[in-house]
Amino acid sequence: MTRRPDPPPLKTDDVRTVIVGTVVWTVALVALLPFYGRLDRADRLWLYWACLCGIALGGIGVYYCRRRDAAIARDAALEATDSPPG
Image 1 (cartoon, rainbow, N blue to C red):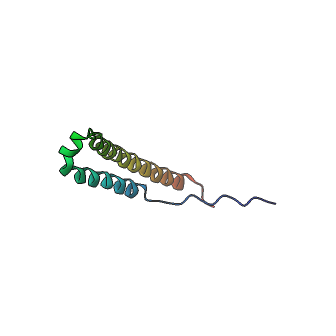
Image 2 (image 1 turned 90 degrees about the vertical axis):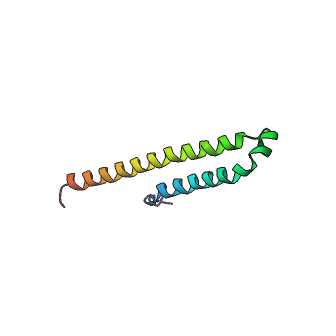
Image 3 (image 1 turned 120 degrees about the vertical axis):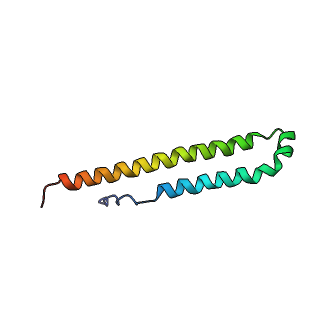
């Protein structure tokens, strides 16, 4: 049995995906704010730090994905101009 060739990779909007995840962490942080006293008494303030880490890592992810998309577009443009006709 012969193996079929791999399909080309899907083009996805990774920046939008990371932004949605960052917004979810931000909403979770805002939703926890009214419960600060209760969470402090229950020794659960780490939930705030988890949300802040999610937001910070989301920011890094957005930066990374934008740079990656720019590099892919730059490489595609260079490949298009460097390839010989035909």
